[in-house]
Image (cartoon, rainbow, N blue to C red):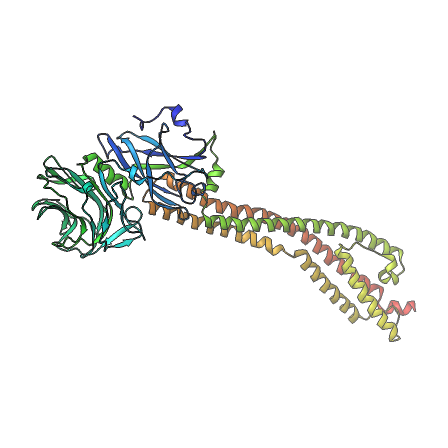
Length: 578
């Protein structure tokens, strides 16, 4: 069998080298089917948790599905939304049994043209399939292209699969009579649909009606919420009502003198009856005699054969939102790749919001590194210049005379990067100014009043504060990175986790392979935040220790210079010198 579990060699073979990626999809119908089912369309739900949508073309036209041995499979898209990272794909399987088997979804070919074919997805017995796409009129997906008219229900964005339709007691949808839909007397047919009854239902309501000549007809409906099927007045009724507000799969098969009613894949009632000739309208909802059921409706399937119980069970258990028969893996395989590219998987699963957060964090990291680098160079320059200045200052003040050692430019020079030099320049200029004022007022040439020394100290303190501001400039950018980086990363993680769970909920499939890549990618935002904060924290503390040392040297120098000025230019000494 072409879908049975392949050998190790065939499982590793690549279908076509033009496609860069493939996703393994496991099919496990154990418990749903007993005998093998042939030519059955199954629903594959793709979302951000199990497929990297960034590798797909905008319209999904590079999607391909193959068996485990590389045989292409027919398929079509019911919905493909690359931005929302969700897709619903109907794939026709030649055979499916209770044994676990694999198929592959290939993508990542930017030159590929679409290979969708709704008509080829269904076998020749399938006479009618209606999906309900939000914003588009219902149409037959089979090759028969049956005419659908008089549609008065309301299209809704969320059915059991993609969009759906909402019916009230007067709503209906008609499918025109055609040769492909005609059922001969004693013939066979199957009709199935997903319904979600509303909270208020008529006492008796029609869901589906197939008309024949005169009063001949088959009706599927609800009586007090309980499903029934009627063939020319003879009925089969289920034992229990359907739950309001809950999706249920309803199916009826007729053939070989038996009409069977199924709910959620299980037979609940049967009727011994031959079908009359039914070659008239097919009506969903109000049929003129009975009001229509009130609730949501999706996936109308009609076949000109009595489908097997396994076929019905497979449809019911593979199409629902909590179905687990079809299980796409959460890890893509890459062409010519022998090992797992975990970083590629993580970055490939990132959502747009996570990319935005990581982009902001990258900018913060660049700024933080730039601040640390420039500040390190500045502090190294300052320390070197200060060391040179201290040596020159000691020599200048030791060699110069008592009074001119502080105020004479010829005795001392310094590098422009020296904070001590700029502080000395402030003290020297202030001292010169006050000595000059003393000469003009006929006071001692080399005498400073205590008030003048205090004013000089105030000027040096102001310069000291400005030097501190210069040394600490832009360090606030590091504190922003330290405190803001982890929180931004956490924000990206929380949003990413929310989007992952929302996409899984929308797809209706819950498994670890679907969740793990999205959660791991979301956590990447937190890692990015910490990657910004941790280096910034270490750099900030190291820079602060060096800045504190320089500021301490500045303060000590200002204290020494003030005392030297006060001692050198005290009035008593000036008087003696005169």
